[in-house]
Length: 635
Image (cartoon, rainbow, N blue to C red; front, side, top):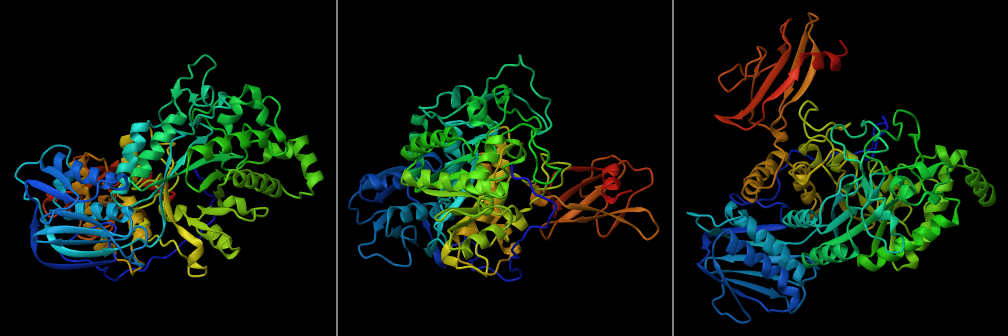
């Protein structure tokens, strides 16, 4: 998890108050470049004839159509190379359309049939995903739906992505997620045209990828003691507790996942987080540490190992690699060498964040390195490490990427930067001529709470859907060509199972998808959110868990002029009615409706609220303890 200081981070301010380009009755996320709606509708026949070549590059598009139409609509599918009366035609352009590029498409729905054309198969795939959003929500169902009119509006859609890098990061280290779950993650992300899966494969809690030349990384480093509850505050495991919780991906598993993703036009970016966040590696190979006694270290289960209350977040145990040891660089050469053979993507992410340096400061080896290399600060020590690591990565034919801390002490000549501590690091890197992926906590950290902490898994910050929607990857002050795109990150300290993964990702990733695919336009949340609600219906069909937190009001305690405790309730979206009670009963729409600041009765112990749209309950029942309001106000 990325820990934030109390300093205010740089942030972008989204433009509000202007309508997006959209068409009535059509709800597509991410918003296409251009939609032209016509009169009439297309009705899907009982036998769907798809005109397409049967070449391997078309397999994933055809599989998508076959699966959706047969599973949900109960239609028979036939594929023909030439079919004058085809239901759906998939066409690769004989003359490339420069604007469409590699991933753009033209989708034309007529009353007599559908045509998807593109320069390359990726465009056809994204066009097919858009087609699914034109069809009834039941197309996302897991069984054949009955009594559904399988119709799509007659429309022309011309569309292409704004950025080549449209990423989601999945932390599989803090908690291990199976190969099947990773595939489900990919299936969900491609519906909204994300094309980059960043896998955070190593951390203090587990090393998740087989490295054949270093077997202890997985026999030892992939397992810890199972704990559930408030991660970070667990009781340290006892010596005799079984270390059986965890797992890892074999190299065959990785090859399978890479192919699965590639078949869906997704690249996988591997991350090995060093020199900090490396306790799992040190537990497996203690000689990686500069600290005596590291042979007693164990893979972390969630007990406290860092002091985030102090400057520099000193470590309580040394979870760093030794930057002064040649063994460290030999180790990394082996790791990166095997990674490079497994992942065809051109970049390897090597972490670099939150490296506690208090143990380095005490190390005679590090002090000797500083004297030898004329390094003045610990930041320069890390820079020395990063530059050597960059050369290792480049020697394997890959490009080196790290979190924005790699700027501290001097960045390597060719490094790419992923900016997470706001956008400041990204701006600095771009001004130095480096490639940047914007991934600021301010907007796209999906492990943050989505609502009030009384109902969300406890994390130190809140990120509402409306704030995520404001994400703009390109600051005005930099060369836009150096901003490769944007990415949302899901750290999983507080995420123990895949249902919670879904809950944390959706719907906020929908907002990110528009920021990285759709053209830059003035944004209007009141236009965007009705499209999100349409996706909620589709999530229900696919049995995908999502967060309804957008319907939860925010609570702000205030002190009334007469000194009594008051509370202001603010809905995130317009059109909601908030009903409340102080008498411990469960409110519904026949209870008092919130209209202005509430005065808390002197003996009340809790405030209960629920939100409605008209006569329909949309929000969850929330219980706010009065003591919590007093605590927040400082009473």
